[in-house]
Structures are given as C-alpha cells and as structure tokens.
Length: 109
Image (cartoon, rainbow, N blue to C red; front, side, top):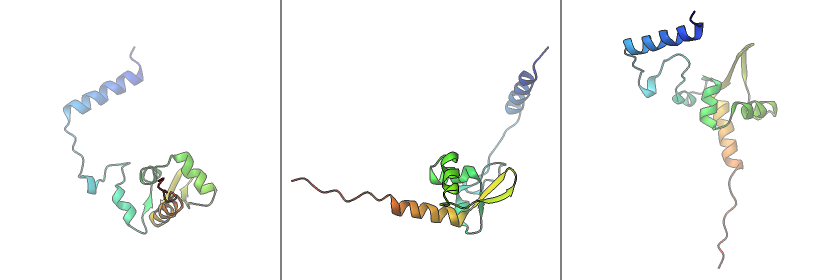
C-alpha cells in the first residue's frame, strides 16, 4: 500500500515534467504568495511578512519584537493575517539607518 506522501510526490513530479511553467517577469509577478519588492514604493500598499523580512533583512521573530516595542506598526486583517503599511516599513528602515551610523574613524599617526 502506498503512502499518501509518496503519491503526492509522484503526482507533483509528473506534473512538473509534463507541463511547462513560466513565471511572469520580475517586476510584474502575480504568482500566488509572491509579492514584488516594488510594492514597497506604494504608500498605501499592505505588505506581507515575507516582503518585510526581505526588505528589512530581519527575521520574523525580530520583526514581531519590534512590533511589541512599538517601533513598527501592524495591520491585523484576521486571526492569521498580518500586514504592514509600506510607508511605515520605509519609515522604520530610515529610522534604523539613522541610528546605526558608525562613529567616524580616527586615523592613527
């Protein structure tokens, strides 16, 4: 008797070999689950967690810590749906860039 996982894997492999899949261009992605990084330029855009992770370079846990500390705002759209305003994420990134400047180096003679 075959296991369900083996059956699903076989069906997936068969589908991948028999169909030709083409993704849209980098700037116009509309594939489910993928949000283009260009969307951060829109002030009213609602960003997914994965987009915020890619944009900030922080982990999901760190982002949630920043939310708890009041440094970043979230939009709860349901029990399991969290989004971020693009303008808030841009402001957060700019604030972080201003805070993390290294002191000027002094040259030793």
